[in-house]
Length: 200
Figure 1 (cartoon, rainbow, N blue to C red):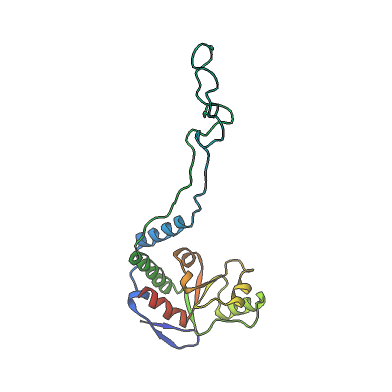
Figure 2: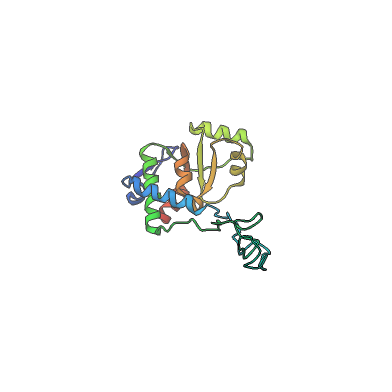
């Protein structure tokens, strides 16, 4: 298939990457797996063995008239441990590389079908100015977009970071969430070739 650039030229791309059938289940799995992988999972509490102190039995077992106790750090006591203490955990889910790449191809193909993928020959501005970025987006007739390049462009990143709904990314940092979340994806022809090499 061919993608039309904004300057009127045509770019030939592989059908296996940019013309895949939409599979909702696969895309959902990729999104959930990605979101799960970025969860911190750092919540932690102390159980009775992790709380400092409480090594000695507070009083003898029998003869005092009080309930038997083995440690002052029991969850029943004030300043004791937590009964079912939370611990750090890894939320990441396993997803095969082949599945992940297929999901990314599916998303890109759907963006093309919905006319939300805009391919440009070059994507750069002269200075890191927000007004220049607004003018560039106005040229492309978009307001909220993900700008994708092969290499990081500081001018683009600095100019776009002040605009709501506008973000930048390099090809190697693309993920299912930022592709789906944006209204439009503006990508350079060079980046399209790089994506094709990655997902092909």
